[in-house]
Length: 404
Ligand code: PLP
Image 1 (cartoon, helix red, strand yellow):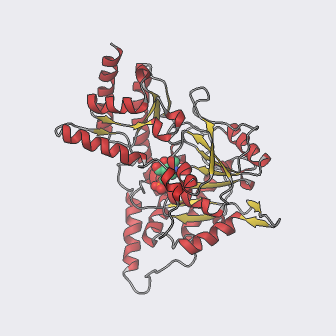
Image 2 (cartoon, rainbow, N blue to C red):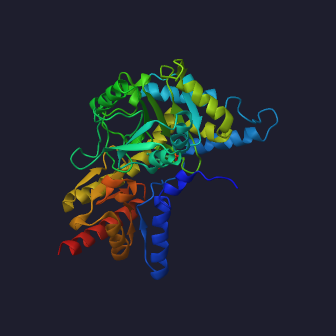
Image 3 (cartoon, rainbow, N blue to C red):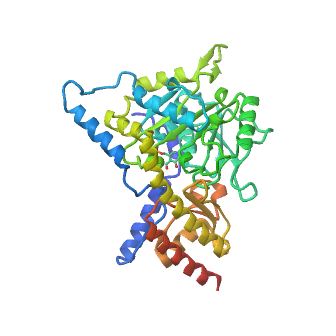
């Protein structure tokens, strides 16, 4: 009989969003006419930009012609045309990343989860709490020790290192999911310093960098001095350009990032990751990569920013409502997420049930992202404008009732 990886048995039985979906289904069955507004799962709602659609159509036509048909991509790391485009984008945001340091993938979630393959199971993993669940889950699945840096109300949900505690691998996410907080240049410099002092590697998730509007906030950890010796960055076109259903992202591992093996030899992390991907990943489809390339053209960037501006306006509407009602929150600026304190001292799941039952609005309970999320709640700005406005009207009414 095969032996199980029993680490899986120690995980929460269901992924957060499955639990939420179950609650919504039960509510729907009991209230078939309810007009539910979903502001929970962070999926986008606007269609792909026209230049991207055109580029993919053209690529599909090429696939149907013998002379231009493409099979497996040789390296599986992405076509040069896309790696050049991503490298150019990095340059435009102030980071010097060569195309060779970039690998194209099928979205950031896979790489966030799979990168642990190249690191030993005896590493100590540091995750800011609350966090996007993949960082913790993928390490618990391998039986690693996970420790936490608190992100809480006191530090504006931007957890910082404790120099008295050692970690080998650190996950950071800015703009943060779920809290919408962002790290400043100085805060990132401190994390880089901590990583250097601990010979640690930072895995930096910048999936929401396109939502940053403040010019002083770095869009990449590689905009900060010293990051290349300690960091891996993962980014995605999912939220930037509506690629959640298309699947394309990129991981940057600088040449300068080296780790010493137990026999004393210096190993290139990029080389090791390339070796892992070579065995287990066969690349992203040609039409999707052509679509992704189009995102980084002048017209592509203009078109995707029209969609991002739409979501940013939703975020402003939600934030304004929270401010008006005196509800404490982070995010909403530089981020599509609004993270607020549940009113009347309610717990996250209690407030989830209250919102669903009383106003048929769905959000995400903060407790699902870690212990510091208890008592907090996440709304997303990725919805339709009118529905967002309607949700905020219902929210105002609900708060009025609760405060009576
Ligand atoms: N990283 C963060 C912080 C996310 O919130 C998400 C998706 O919600 C991802 C990564 C994964 O994105 P992708 O669709 O590229 O897999």
